[in-house]
Image (cartoon, rainbow, N blue to C red; front, side, top):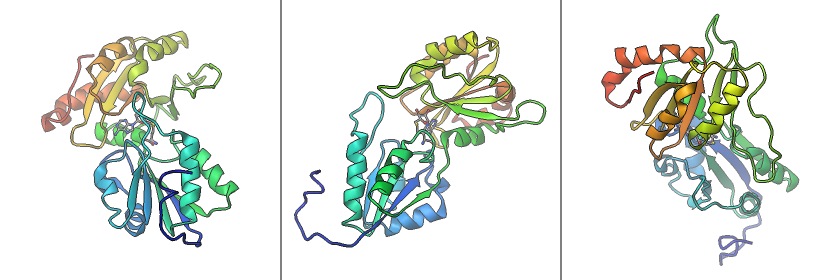
Length: 268
Ligand code: SAH
């Protein structure tokens, strides 16, 4: 089935378990204790592109196989990954599927879980810190706030290849905090869609690039100017937060975070 599956050597007929692990948004020490333990005990790790190599290096006795998918980069088909996980479970005791952030948020975990269930293979999901929460922590901005925002929406305008075009802006989201994943290359589309949906152009927004890492950057802006902010981004993963909870960011950057030297600010 795969090079790796056809590897020579004795086939071991024991049935393993697959651990779908969230590696978190970057910083290794934000990994859960459970994730670190399973990684250290694992026999084989199938790893995504966004996972920090420091996290993968905790799997000291495992064979590490990169199955990374990032837009614009070589991708490994999802079906191939599903088959590889199933194949690995008949060969190894502890199989890890390591994904960036939390596996259950924009991580295609469900397809892998369904494949494992269909093959009757035991699995466990170990959560990780999703980018929205890493960004919120970096900013010192709560995604919910009394009297301002009672809900948070995680959304992406990106669609799968054969998905029908639909309106991705959640209805009634204007009072919520909107967290937009995979937003960096879609800022024009996002601006237009939000303005069409009735958002005010002065609504505060902020891009956080490389959340939780020492090279993180913060770009406060407004909906009207998110294209300009997007152009300032580097090549790291970036997430876009929108809503009134972001109002305080410019102030906070000046007052405290900017001093740390790792944050960049754009004028509102
Ligand atoms: N499962 C992941 C999301 C995968 S989709 C999670 O829970 O975080 C990939 C998108 O996540 C990126 O395009 C970006 O929008 C966001 N992302 C992942 N890591 C990030 C980071 N360190 N900083 C900012 N955004 C990040």
